Amino acid sequence: MPPETAPDDDESALLSRIDDLRIASIRPLMPAACLIEELADASVVETIRGARGALSAITRGTDQRLAVVIGPAAAHDPAAVLEFARRLVPVQRRLGGELLLVVRVFLDEPAGGAGRWSGAMYDPGLDGSFQINRGFRQARQLLVDIARLGLPAGCLYLDSISPQFIADLVSWSAVGASTAASALHRELASG
Image (tube, rainbow, N blue to C red; front, top):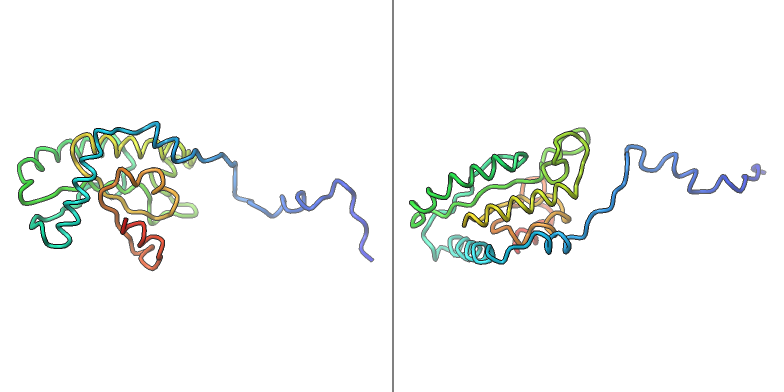
């Protein structure tokens, strides 16, 4: 017959020795609706709506322009990405009859994971601190700033959480090799 356990030796104490061993802390994620309200800009709606329509027409072949998704592999430096976008504005003005430029703003890192950098939204300080709320705020502000320039932005969605915070500011989204088999990701990218 097993020995009786003391009243303070409850199940949660036992689980604490095996559950979340690599979790340093748990902080609540801000509600997406609150961040959207905080960083909303009605002036960018037409840029995003217009680009979505144009990209759809280009895909269907009713708009003969070429869609060009261009930008850095990772948006870990928002100031540099915004500067890149600013430099695209005169190019879009000059070549807008032939091209539709979409600023590539990849905020997740597909090669991320255990021991590797997860992307600008999940580790905006590039220091392993994983200040996700700060990352979502920084990502959203960057997308608002790009749209204020009159340029559409394109993202790669790697999870189902981040689109809740930024999808209203994205004109083009991609499904990558790591998510192509996921019905959820295909639905996100399809709008």
